[in-house]
Image 1 (tube, rainbow, N blue to C red):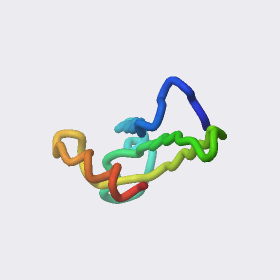
Image 2 (image 1 turned 120 degrees about the vertical axis):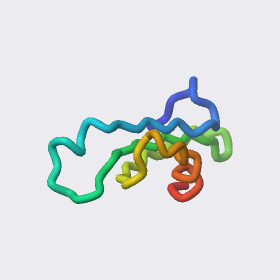
Image 3 (image 1 turned 30 degrees about the vertical axis):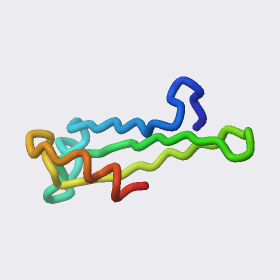
Length: 69
């Protein structure tokens, strides 16, 4: 997904809504990481989805960006 408004800055969206509907033990959050960039003046984009056992109160959301890219 390419969004010119995002520029080259990744956008991370996390939710705690899914764990209540899932039987996965330890599931705390699901996340979506959206990145955009340019290659030779052509806009490119990428969307990644993931799950984590880290709760939002843990405060370690930043490592998710590094591991997912």
